[in-house]
Image 1 (tube, helix red, strand yellow):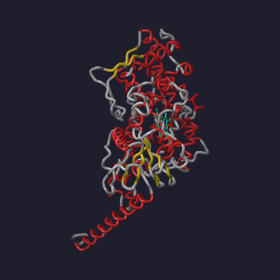
Image 2: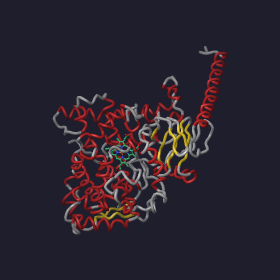
Image 3: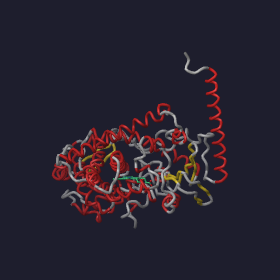
Image 4: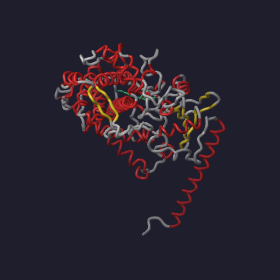
Length: 518
Ligand code: HEM
């Protein structure tokens, strides 16, 4: 017997059509009203209703927005469903909006897929401006600010020694070693543990991150273009975007709760070193649920490891392709550490190594992979700027890949050329580029990132020659793949001399013995 007869079915269909037509008419009207009341810069033509949602490629969005920037000028607008995205195509506009007007440009857009579903509203990077974000930002700042460097430095020293030894002994795994270094520093600080190659716990984290990042890109999910879809009360099983999103959330939270369980077991056994998470769990002030606590750790590990790994990939590729900066850097390094590999550079040498400090900034500017389309901010009040009017809720991002590669912004932008940062802002790692973002949402870990890069780059350049494999030219006209387990390009690491090889064995071998269970 049919559960529903034909007449009912027709009625249901008619009701559905009426709702759909009503919604289409309402959306068109709402859009006309918005366009009458507000004024957006250069709207990139798109389709009715969905706007530009189908135009954005699934990968390499940075080079795509760069093309749009060349066509549409210093600011342009994309539309994803009912949401307007203003893209700043110069540092000038990005600073004017995100930095100078930070009090109203510091929220995040509503991302039902990336924030609500995939992150259970607990990933701080995506949180809207408000109390939850403020609490977590304050907590992160306490761990990551410059006065905490004394806590990070011993780990950065240890892990960069291990990196040198791994590059000497297993140069074929160079890209895994860069990833291990980046992850292990932040894992030490967060969980008091080191990580080794192929550590399954970290592979789970990278997997979670690789699954999450694409959903932060413009127009990545239908429900982000049409947030009202997420509010329609239909069973989860009729919301196809949830099938994947819920599974990603489950995998992420499971991986991180395992870290927490493990930590608590080790505390009981008296084996756990003091670290950020032991302090957080013991704190009487910090009142976070277990899932929130897990996501605080997720945020630190995710935000701190893959970004650093990618910047190191940029240095290595940049040095292989444009090695002319190396002799200038080595002149400084040899002056400090000896021409004959007397000792490794350390943090105490920082004042005497301006070229390395400049290379740190160039590493963050050159060919940015992780944040190739910026990290979108959202406006919390209506605003006017240079004749334009933006409504509250407008998404504003900076065209990161385009700006970093724009000859109007940087002389010969395609060149890896640290000298460009040898200026009065050399000691401010966040200035002169948009690699760490801008305004109140600027990367809270930039001091840690800069010191990670300083110690790794100084030791790399002092100890190794980095050469391109001529049979496999390095391709840099698009971002490297996001995944940590695939070799992004071919490159050769050779110790500079036999003395440097002996130095690595003498000073780094011990650091490379990693007991990730300890
Ligand atoms: C070279 C390495 C790094 C790069 C290029 C980088 C870049 C960025 C960018 C572009 C943002 C968004 C800024 C904005 O919205 O204006 C961000 C946010 C953030 N970063 Fe980093 N980052 C790096 C390393 C780190 C490290 C080492 C940590 C922590 C250990 C960290 C923690 C965070 C956090 C927690 C946020 C979210 C801030 C918020 O939403 O308020 N980052 N980062």
